[in-house]
Length: 155
Image (cartoon, rainbow, N blue to C red; front, top):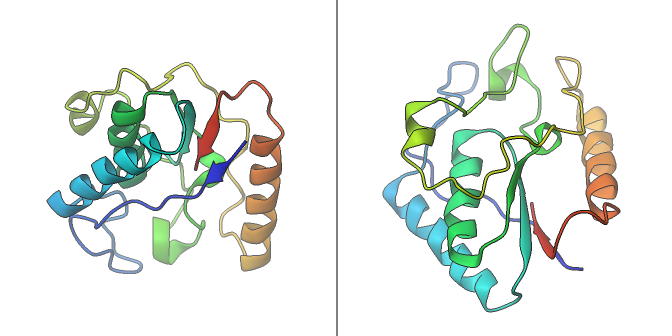
């Protein structure tokens, strides 16, 4: 099994540390990049599972690419941003939920498994760099060892 690490395309606006916006969409060129990612992946394999952060820019990228390649999209909180005030805001941070959002309703999101339950808990706020690295290690080991995930993985 191959694991592809993909980053979302160009954001629609810049994140201002400590101010936001923290959950922005993709710029039109970022949308094009997501489609190009799907086209690239389609030449490499015929079966994929996309594992994405709940953030709009990441989820949109996965949905667009999966619409090119096929394969389900799973929203996994373990692969989200570094839990620091500068990147996700302050207070008791809760990852965004796309379901019911107007932007989500406008996507062709048939391949999103809305019943999937994130296997990784949201870390304590504020996460240190060493905690981030440990979370990434645990998440990748858990995902890589999961035989129920079909095909190659795109994270």
